[in-house]
Length: 475
Ligand code: ARG
Image 1 (cartoon, rainbow, N blue to C red):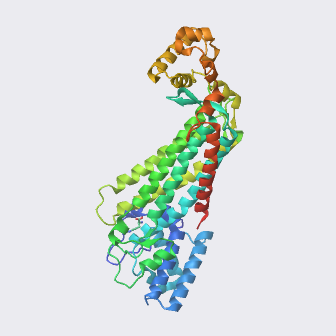
Image 2 (image 1 turned 90 degrees about the vertical axis):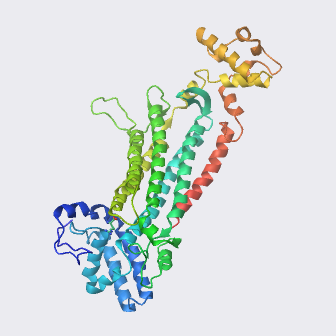
């Protein structure tokens, strides 16, 4: 930023200039400059409303819109830049307008305040960026669905307490992560509906005595309606806090996926191999290949949650209406947007390129007596109360541990020795249920891990994701 003569929007009633300490504390243009395109959009809509109210002639409106277009162009090319003397984005843009229009530039401020402007700009910025974030989520969902499709039939150890529990389709597990992300997209779409309210026209806090048309401005800016209460409109930052909750929840979801990817890539699991393009090495250990993308996904959730906490803490206890504390809303919001746009493509790339070690997954799927529940459920089908079946299978597991055998290796005699319930019956040998593909296929009700159900999920998810992608691409 170049150093320039200060131009403030509020000098009239002051004798001396502000102290350096105040100026340094007060300035926000170094971060709110990214709102410039949105502030300019709102300015165009405001100029039209001033014209319709008879406060700008047709010629003045034409010159005003021409200057706003030119300023927009100059901002985009970097020809116009904020200076350290511009307090905020609104100040900088008014300077740009005055440079182009002289005194006519001063007419645009009528009937609006930085209080309704900043609330409008931040809503516009977020509504725009939420669609980009949804597009990135769709890419990650698509990567997970693609891997799930390849692995609908791949049996894997399903875990609770990070201990082998029951075999599952690895595709089923990958889709569990995709479902969490589809809820995140749902939340953002729902958020957008509530965020589609325009604060412009609220002025500083009480509305304007000028004959403005808040509904027309709202419509021009793509909002569904104008705010019904000017005081709420300038004081409310629910939309920012709610966005940050959505972002934090996405952070939590990708941290859980990240943690699993880290585990899966470890020597102990060896379920996946991370593509070189998404791995890093060690500066000292030449053999290392580290899953940094997944670790950063896990780590970034900390700052996303922090952003939410930061804003909620700022908002707590604020009296109505606008208070300068509200300037603190922007950095957490911007940081959350930047973080998501940085981390989501990397995770999507890591997931879509990882190689799944099907042989290792299939081999470990029955480990840890993972078919014990299937055995107990067979006894239930034979009429044994589940309580007794559970106990008998528990004894069998202990017998196996003592005798260093797996469930599948037991003979009819050994089985019968532990409990008469395990003797062959009209339904055949209990050993028949001790196979992993059978265990997967048996869980065939809605939501179960049977490969057929996994394929149903994939079909349904693809429809959901297509719909989400279409929403993100609507303007
Ligand atoms: N930079 C301010 C913010 O971010 C803009 C609104 C300033 N309003 C005021 N009354 N000082 O909140």
